[in-house]
Image 1 (cartoon, rainbow, N blue to C red):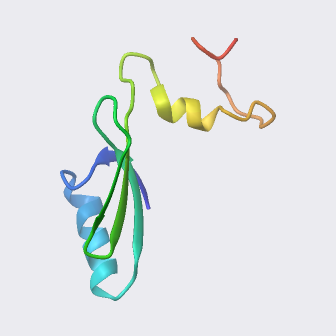
Image 2: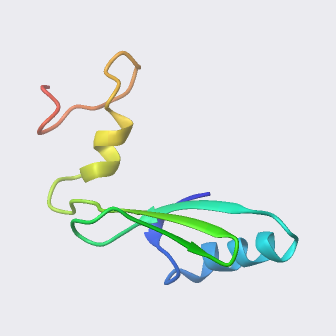
Amino acid sequence: MVTFSPYPFDPRPRRAVEALINEGMKVDLICLGGKNALVEQTLKGLEVLSVPVNKKEPGGKVKDFYCGDRTLDRDCSGPGHGD
């Protein structure tokens, strides 16, 4: 599961994750994290990867990840992307 909010503070993905785990599924979650650190943790059958996002530049790390492969047809114009 990927969410553009911090876990566990947003109740919507938290409830979805809890429901999946209660049904016996293993869940991997990628979510927003703190300012500088990439954090990995395991919580009761949930693997959480918190990705830091630079909120000063529109898109930040998420845009860097999304636009990293310039061969794909994506709108990646803006600062730091050579356009």
